[in-house]
Image (cartoon, rainbow, N blue to C red):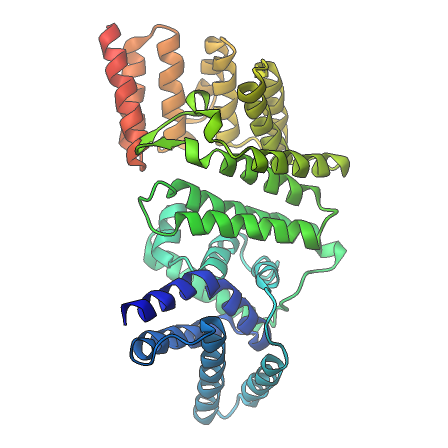
Length: 411
């Protein structure tokens, strides 16, 4: 009984996005596909503990969801006579579904549908996180600093828009690709970041999210090999993933400069370097490629004992030209500090508007480090307090508390 329930839950985590993408692309209705899939998972949790898990759990769920979708459409038609097209679409979807087994992974089509210009820009990434990865509105709302109810309402409206506008589930043509690809890559990176932030086990599913993001990025490079930023994003995430086992030791946070490189996945680093090379060969530079190059320089510094500090500074300057985000400026300040240019780093931080950094934990952590390096221990202590108060990761919080204690011993 428990084994059957565990199989149902594991299949839900592993297959939700693939199932939803396939059913949605045939029905054209994301919300209806979600409802049907939810009912199929509910039926699995009720039946499998009694009858045992089927040989192919994913196929069972697919069949059950397909039937639920058709049944729901038929019931809806009897209630709303003015919607005969709904039944025709459902019946066409049923015929299409019956033709293809096993079904292909069509999550990229769903991602590009969510990135359609008809969908409001601010909701595209949250919508992709929910429909492709199955993240709930509460978790997405937390990442985007809005209330769960507000996020839920916006997601519902976006799904209605997809249905009402008849947005196609397809990879767009070349003329419309670049603007939508940017939104898709942003969503994939957001997925990776959600998993990376929870990779220490503070929330279930962290590893699954990072693996899914890497898979989707690889899918982008396979289907769109001439898009350099796809390669850049893949390289960036692979560099980060290669160091995942070294960033926590017995639950304690370990900064990159102190990590044991023997714990790094050097095969994955080689893959990251190959992806970055593929990006550069296309001669269409972009921010993901620059961020990947920064990570490559950090890796070279540790593995080959090279002094790459000036290279990293130059790359951050280029990144700020491309995308002058708060994160890019904070990274630039940290790079200047690493090159013994604390005063210059502090100047970079001081030029950022307060409204943009009041709740940005990394800013206060870097500011504290720089102020300590300049000998302004009182101001550094205040900045550490700010960083500690904003920390959402218990390991990072403990690391900062340790830095604060060390600082106080110097006073």
